[in-house]
Image 1 (spheres, rainbow, N blue to C red):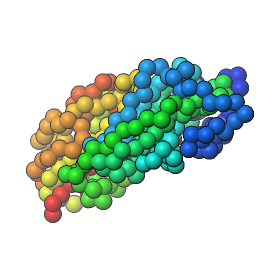
Image 2 (cartoon, one colour):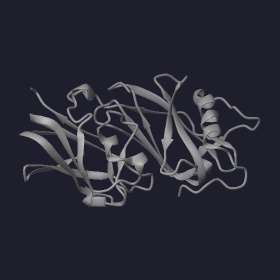
Image 3 (spheres, rainbow, N blue to C red):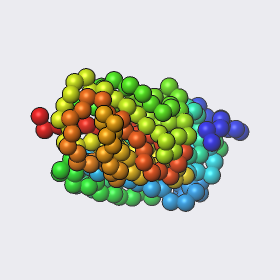
Image 4 (tube, rainbow, N blue to C red):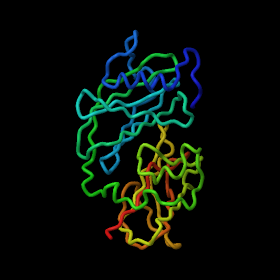
Length: 264
């Protein structure tokens, strides 16, 4: 995984430029795009967040590739979610986060990639619908955004640092280094607050690993949960909160974002 391209080498920046040009679905090279199914291992999985404002697509490919997801509210698409990887080069385990989505809305999308063979691959046009997300607090109300990281079980690399879980950007993520169910992150809100809800938005890998299924929060030695990942109602006063992965599919578990909400 994350091996460098062999044969017809294509720089990642150049590959992303090709994908951006192909955002609307048209061919951008002298060779017609090939069907993405030719390099896909199994089905691509689109997972909308409970808030309805983001979605994550994961897929595995049989060859190293630079991948992206073109998406939009019409068949013209127009938006591009680029692949996140752990090496900055073509690889075979892909995850792209679609941001700026509207709850309860149908989206069109197309998966595309430039392979290590230099060819452009595109899927058929597909659709998904975001959840209503009406009861979910807005990201602006997230008191964990910008919080101080007190402790973390581990970090895969600087690009996947713990601070990514509190930066307010769902396109970034904190990844542990193989902690599985032992992954945790502790934050300091800067002041005591009455907490009414917490949230944990798990990261994932295309091979099915790194998915947190349930989580707990611990305040002053008292543990609450486990809760299913996503939004969970609570009732306590806290300044320092530890989030633990309780159950997972193992591997480099972590979070796109953690959140803390208060009515006060």
